[in-house]
Length: 168
Image (cartoon, rainbow, N blue to C red; front, side):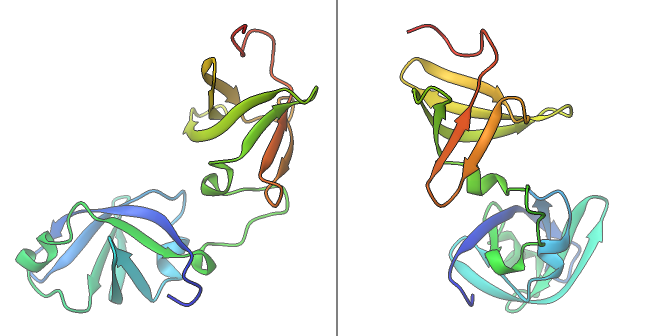
């Protein structure tokens, strides 16, 4: 991988067919990261893509060194990664979830809430999971709550809606 910074984009689900094709469950909204990748990393092992196609919401790939269902089975369960440079471009006000995980969360008054540990897609808006000394805090990822995201500074400034943060 050219830049060495890898991002998880899916999981190897199962062999597909009799020639060693691998079905991947994507963790991405689009398939562009797969389509832009010449190499995918299964676990810790880089594999060159011979062919790739989209089938019923999954990604099917043939990779170098795998030519039977038995060989494909050895990769099942592996997290599938690609280089960050293969991710599709994003708009100025967009962020990848992996960029938000680990950010320190502080309120507009400077009170530390904790760190972002995950996100959930709800349909209406994404929800940030913040691990705080008071327990898990769930914050909607909306402009009224998340006022500033500073990736370089490693922090996010929020104005939580009343009742979202448990009392000390």
